Amino acid sequence: MVDSGRSRKARNRAFLLVVVLVFVSCTTRNEPFAEIDNAVNQGNYAQAAQAMSGDERSTYYRDKDKVLYYLDVGMLYHYAGDYELSTQNLNEAEILIEQYFTKSISQAAGSLLLNDNVMDYAGEDYEDIYLNVFKSLNFLSLGDFDAGFVEVRKVNTKLNLLEDKYSNLAAGYNSADDAEVELKAGENRFYSSALARYVSLLMYRGEGDYDGARIDYNKIVEAFLLQPDIYEFEPPVDESTLRPPDGARLSVLAFAGRSPLKKAKTLTIVTGPNTVSILTMDEDDAGQLIPTGYNSFFWPGIDGGYRFKFQLPYIEPQGSAVDTIRLVVDAQPLGQLKMIENMERVAEATFQVKYPIIFMKTVTRTIVKGILAQMGKQQLQEQGGLALGLLGSIVADIAVEASEQADLRTARYFPAHAYMGEFDLPEGEHFVELEYYSGGTLLQVDELGMMNLTKGGLNLATSYSNK
Image 1 (spheres, one colour):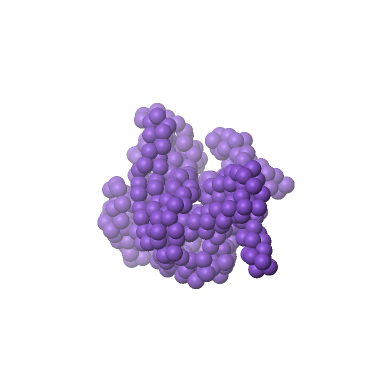
Image 2 (image 1 turned 45 degrees about the vertical axis):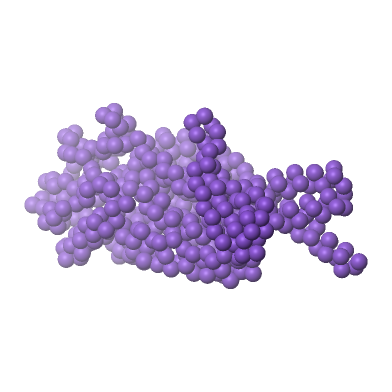
């Protein structure tokens, strides 16, 4: 009798623990970014960054969202032209991203049952990659080529190690006592950034090192050739980029749009003897849920008859209204820029490296929590009667499903697309503008002002439209 009582108490405690965990896991809050986004849409980037800082920071970011804060503020200060403040914040983001991911590996075995929502946000990989590109551009604007080179080289290093990074995380999860099936990282299909290579090319060329510039030029061509899923358009550079101009060469980098969102899709787990089946449901045009996917795999020891719902995140591009960017110098249109990188495609590709881990971790967590909740409901029915059992059943079902809400955190202010252009001009002072169009309609004019173009100089102009 004593052992039986202890067993019931243990199961009840496990049930209560699951309920507490799931309600903690699903606690969310609305993020009041409407005023911030309004300032951003009007091009008041410094104002937006300042409004989210200081005493107001906790209004927009939780303590576990520090990386998001530093990324957002760092990007806004970059657009505002405050390159030192931008670098300071992006540095903080990069440091925390590495710390949090290292921590996640060391704690993987003990955190298998925790939803990612309750953990410190360690950044998406495309955020970790592109923060170095923008830090490099910050240093170039401040005249520090050495620091700029360091940043673009970090991009190559991070891409080379991306698959190993998540293989190590999967190994940590696989060592957990609750691990029923093996977690594996996905394959990395993005290993060379044409945008990062172009920034490096500009620095080599600005130093007069055309051999170094040619290496990066070849890497850009190779990136387009070997990664057609990422680069679905023609390379924007040719051999002319390696020929010194007679006068000065103006190089332009322009960014448009907003980085992708993360959204949630709902899936259902149905168990059979030693089998788990995953059913994907999507809404049709009438708003009705219809099955759109099915997957089944071996799960040793599980009984049949369980049915649980859970959510998984996916990347949804926001795109950009901009389809044409025209350079105007001294009130004369000189030509259009060409896309060099679809940064949203990079976000989708890098996300797929860790997606298999997110998938199996979430399935494992949902099943373990769901079964413990079922055990708790049975105990309540046995001890408290039908009414208490029914109440407990409702609470448990709501709690388990609510706890498996997807982690939808992502930085808000990275661009969607990157464009470049090169134009040979006479040396001297020139007034530079960029015009952003959508379907022939002028959306925005960015007056970059007077630029002193020199023969052999970097002569780099950068611009951004949030349209």
